[in-house]
Image (cartoon, rainbow, N blue to C red; front, side, top):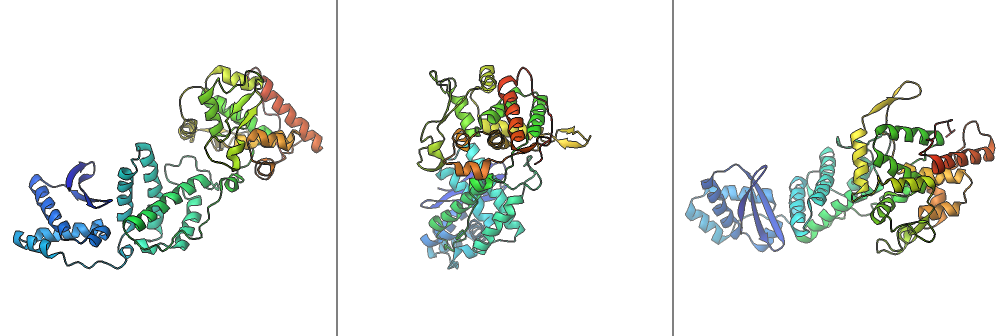
Length: 433
C-alpha cells in the first residue's frame, strides 16, 4: 500500500509497485489535502498499469503520469484507470531510464532488501557518488549509454580522481586496487539488479574489464630507507599519539599487515605461545577460503625486546578497529607541516602505513636474512611475491659494497629491536635510493 513519509529532504511516496520492486517518488512540500489527492491519483494511476508496465516504468515517468491524472475530473480519472493507461512502453527501458533516477532507486532497494547497516549503506552511497561524478563528466545520461569502453575509461579515470574528502591524496599515487574493486563490484551489482528486477537489456558493460590485483597494485609501494624510517618515527613520536606510534612500530618490526595486527590485538595474550615464546599470527583458513595467501597467513614471529615492550605497554590493546583508527589519525594530521633539513615546509603524513611492511621485508633482505625467512614472516604463499613485490635491496650511502649494506641494516634493525625505547635511533645517513 502506498504511503507518504516525511524525510529530511521533503515528502516521499513509498510503494511496492510490483513483487520485489519498491518505488520512491520525491514530492517536495504538500499540505494534508494535497497529500490525499496525490495518493488517490497515484493509486488510480498504478491500477491502470499492466504488470509489464509496473516492472519497467521509471520513477520520473510515473510521477509525470500521476500529475496528468490529477488534472482530470474524478469521473474521467476512474474511467482512465478502468480502461487502462494508454502509455507507450519502450521496448528497452534502459534507453529511457536515466542513471540519476536509477542510482537512488537501487540504493533504496538495496537498503531494504539486503538490510544494510548505517556504515555499510554509507560506503555504498559513497561508491555511487563517485560513479555519478564520472557519469556526469562523461555525459553518460541513460542506462544504455554505458558500454565496456566507458567502463574501462572509468577505471583509468578513477585511478587519479580524488574527492575533496580524500585527505591522504599524494600527487602521482594511484587509488588502491581494493578501493577500485569495491566500486566496480557495487556498480556491477546495480547493473545486475536492473537486468533481473527491472528487465533491462544486458548489453554487458563490464565485459572484458580487468582490475589490477592487490599484489600488482601493492608493487607500486616503495620501501623507506634507513634514514627515512628513523626520521619517520621521530615525526610519529612528535605527534604524541602513543597508540599510533606503537602500532607503527609493531608493523615495522614484525612486517604485519593491518589484518594481522588486528588479530594480535583481539587475541592478546592468547596469541603468545607459552612454550616457544613466539607471537602467533592467525590460524590456517582464517577467512574460510582455501588457496592463495589465506593458507599461509598463519605464522609465528619472534618477540624482540621492543615488540615485547609494545605489547607490555598496552597502548595498542582494546576493542577497536585498527584500520579506522589509523585512517582517522592520518585524516586529523594530514595538513600538519614541519621543516625538513633544508628548511622547507613538508607535510608530516605523506606516507602510506603499508610502507612499513614493505620496509620490514626490504631491510631484512638488505641485512642478509634469507628470502624464505622473510616470506614466512610476511605470510606470503611463496617467495615469488616476496622477491618481486616486497623485497628490494637498499644500498646505503657511504657504505661500500654488499657487506657495507648488510652491516648498516643489521645495525639499524638491532637498534630498533633491542634498544628502541631506551635509546631511540637517530638518523645517521641517507640511502642511495
